[in-house]
Picture 1 (cartoon, rainbow, N blue to C red):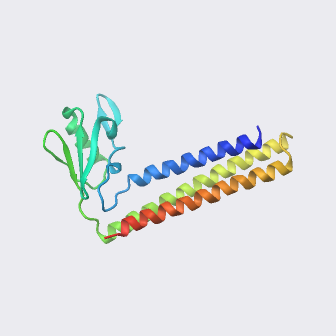
Picture 2 (picture 1 turned 180 degrees about the vertical axis):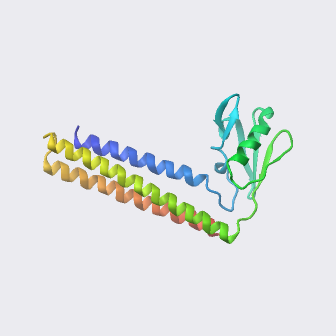
Picture 3 (picture 1 turned 90 degrees about the horizontal axis):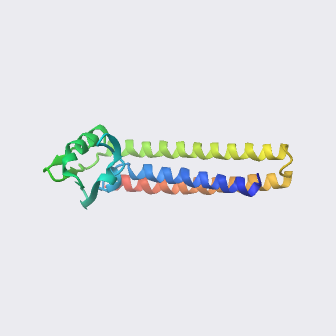
Length: 186
């Protein structure tokens, strides 16, 4: 396998890891209502665990309110149950056609706990990136040992992978900073 292929595969894995982090951040509650808070909640729908965004229209008409309008109103009970099981700290209100989720303001203590969770998630993602780098470097070393790559190609490939990791960690730090700022706004 060429150094270029290893680099491209590593870059793809890094991008996927960052995308997963971005999705996780969407589901972390800030002071404002966003559909991302509940869109990935799994609901029992005809015997299958289905994400809420696939079976309902989710909107945030007000900064402190999420409204869920299921395409099939008969599943409102399952939606309410799934939201409570997701342990989001939200109380559901239903009128038979839609589910309303008012978001109470976050206390200072709760905001700090959430910031700590975001920092922990960021650190876990950085560890995942380092693991990707380690695997790529092992792969490059194996290719050198098998005489598929030269030492120079190996060194350049490892430097390029390190550059990807460095840029990705910078991106993660920016995401952390934005989310922290968003959380700490009163």
